[in-house]
Image (cartoon, rainbow, N blue to C red; front, side, top):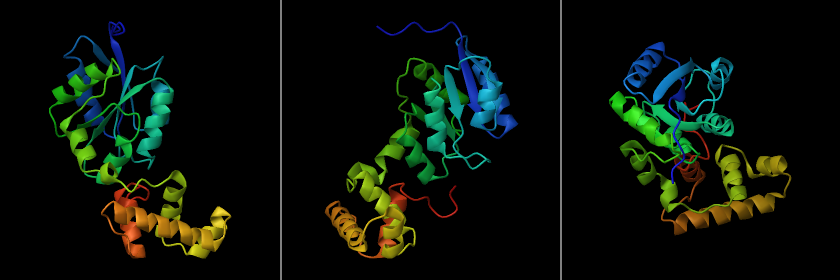
Length: 220
């Protein structure tokens, strides 16, 4: 049995642009269940402006404060909010990153606002919102056929592929250079088994960006 839905769902919006807030507020007024009660350009600002608990938050992924979308989702969900990502969709890196968080769905700003209101109504029950955007993100995410790196291997890859020498990585990680070299060999072998060879250091960098362990150039 589904939990009883509140008479009016309190919705918050984190977005840099007032025109988006105006459009979202107008769209939600077309429903009896949803009300935009707070809007801010940052998560901190939303928390400061929201009087009482928010049921749902619409989150833009690329904010002018340079904050991490994944961290923003984690903060909002920790505060008890269900989150819908609302994005222009121009950054595969940001989409892949947020798709691995507790976000309930991803909606493109180019879609009719009805798509957002429908997503919010589903999210009110904590149900995933399987939009075409999210399906495309997951389908094209290299992690679906990933190399199955351990958390430590992911960390070593990010450090090494980001231009650091094995000696520098060893010093930062507090382990021997030979251990770093062993990690790199294992990482390369796993990518080879996944059909995504990483023979050179440039290849390793590409794999790290593809899998979201490093941001693409010019990404926050």
